[in-house]
Length: 305
Image (tube, rainbow, N blue to C red):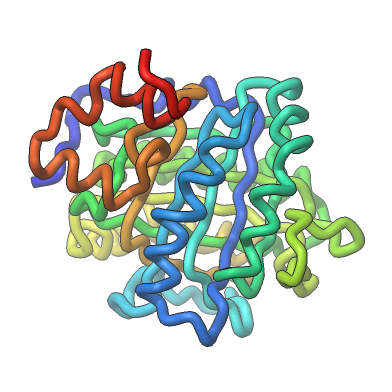
């Protein structure tokens, strides 16, 4: 059973992620989804994890087929046109100096994107992201952990980034105050500029239509889909709908099929060191020798202690 606390809020543990980015990913259409997901988790993931300077790296895999009620339909707010995704990635840093170290070596990583990604768009979060509430105990999930997780992307109704950010912050705070919301993490990235496409990965599309230049992303977790639907019908959520219509032009919700953490607090997780599925096998068999310091040192450096 998934573990959530009714008394402990773990949100503060994300404060070490001073600078962040949120990258949307779309797989190449001729790459089967299972091949894509395996490569991303077990080949690309450990490669990214080893780039110096990295403080935080988590893959959120998205499921195109789940239920039809991920987010309520609100009159006047349209879905983004032709917007399908296979994942959302956070890459974060403890300092600007660490980010500079990562950027200097990142060409090794970005050269790999063309093998499975058709499009990636890295939204910059120079002031980081904000976790308003997190009652989920595990700081480094490496699975579908049983919680009902969604990522919701919002497109601004106007061109005023400050006003949109102010509204989204207030909106997120309102949602996070409800006990049905187990986790809420808010991303308010800088406006995306097609003239400076990011990340600098060759042979991958990095352009967005105008309605996806100024966005916000809210990550939500509930105990179950039933809890999510009950929340959307609650007075607290219904009371926000008029303000949503005034400030949001587009919305799209994506179901999360798994969360895979490779680096936290500048430390490799077992998934980051060995690969996501390999880490799951180690945990399943209770192979504690595989997570001992001598084995980790050998796998990380190629030399025994």
